Image (cartoon, rainbow, N blue to C red; front, side, top):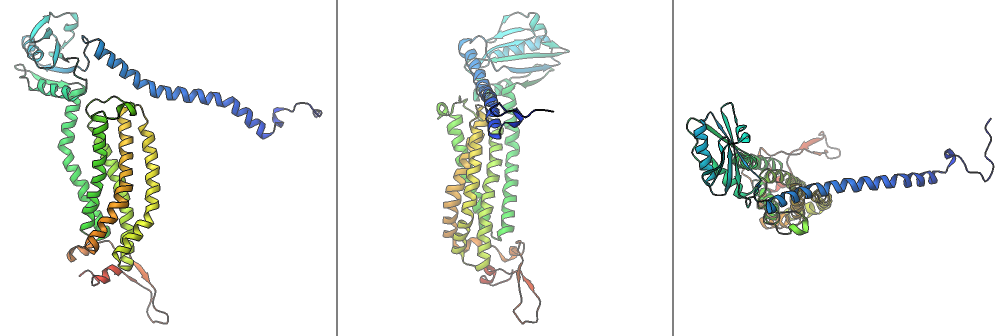
Length: 399
């Protein structure tokens, strides 16, 4: 049988009080947590910074080693024709040199005969050329995109098809595709938004007002993005290096995210205002009570989303920083200036005219059924009324 420990002797670990166990556990775990957090945050902050330092050092200290080459594939071309094509490319403005299967070219002339490395640039009738820009041209910049267009404008070798690639060329192609399809996407989004708001409110004026007000938040976000991340203002304070351009896909993502959040806030307010207006038909009172009833919810939601987006904006990656801070600014503008000031002001200025719609279209409005009990002692059953107080003031019914 085990003996019971005498008084004054240290108790076993199983008999250590709960607070003492927690204290010992915290002392053991805290250093591990601190080391993990420091290592993780250090990795996130140093990795992109080191990459930028290496790139800047190569660009400034080693001008003979340009970066951001443009890849060119010449398929089914004769060796002589590929050499003539490489000469033309090397004579373009902004080109430092051209490496091809027939040698290295500079300023329209062959400066180095083909070597063993050049021989590997011709495989199965396809010639691989690399157009190296001058060191002053960034890998991804407006100048590099212009250079891609000049390369593509050069006449192709006889009986050969040429394809141009590389990072700058991918950006040019992406911008072309997005620019071609973007108007149709925007038109679809706006039309669906107008139709849905009309079905909810029964007004032809409110949908257009909501879209215009949403556009104000978007213009504030994109204006700040260009001023800060493209032109480089506040780059030192925010800790990034401006490149003079914005990646094409990022504004599209920012638009979709911001437009959805902004329209969400708009529907919160308009639905409550419409509900109050249908209840008593007093336009000014409906606007006042609708703003008062939804103000707290919208403000709380905006604050939470802003905190999340600002946290994302603390990233050392410029694209992530732009996404987080840009959307955070749009949320603040939309929840304060637009929803709390412009919406009630404009609705008060328009007055009851803001609910206008042709009688032929009023039938398509989505109506909520309001149950009205029969009068006490009456012989009728409980019924439902589909006519709101606002409709009664307008003459009742759909006409």
